[in-house]
Each structure stands twice: as structure tokens, then as C-alpha cells.
Length: 124
Picture 1: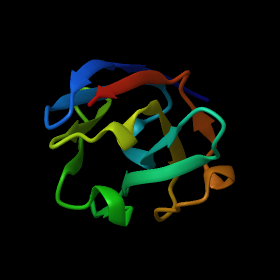
Picture 2: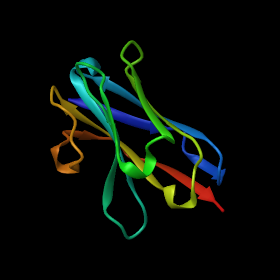
Picture 3: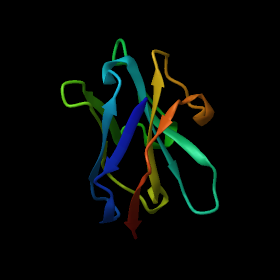
Picture 4: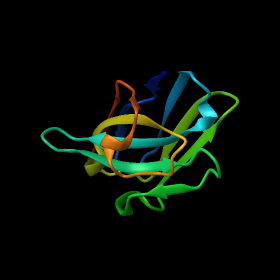
């Protein structure tokens, strides 16, 4: 069992930066591939980025490549999403998710645990 708690969301102007964090508790954090997803009002929950449990390889959806960076600190049981050059279309609730000892996936149903989400709003 893993508990995930996101933090760091907020309101930022277009072009600005924000870092969201996800703190994990429970089973060994290092055994989990971690993902970030986002959900805008009236839309599906979409994959944003992931970092694998074994090699720390990272993956991004095309719309955030070059702007967002996912990282993890296994000593702190935390995964981060650094978001730069934010756009109004990045506005959404951001969720972190954990997948036990598996490669990355962009499919939300393949993640085992989820946080409650943190709101990110980008004003134009």
C-alpha cells in the first residue's frame, strides 16, 4: 500500500514556472515507477510524464517536452514535476500515480495508486 500526497500547485502567469511535488509513504518508494497525469474540466485524465523505478528513465507527452522535467528523490520518497514556460492550456488538476515494479505507462488504469491532486492554474 502506498499513500501519495501532492503539493505545490497554484496560480501562475503564462510563461512562468511552478514545481509540484508528490510525497509517498508506505511501501518502498524506489520500487515504483511514478507518473504525473492531469485533468482539465470536462476532459479525460491525460498522461504528462513518468520516471521509472529501476533506471530512472523519463518519458513525456509531446506537448510538455522541453518545458517540464520529472525527477525523483528516493531518499525523500518524493517525485517532482518542474514546469517551465507554462501556458494557459496547462491548467488542470495534476495527479501523481505509482506503478509497482513496472515500466512506464501512459495509461492511467495501469497505475496502482493515486494522490488526491493539486490544482495548477495558468493565467493568460
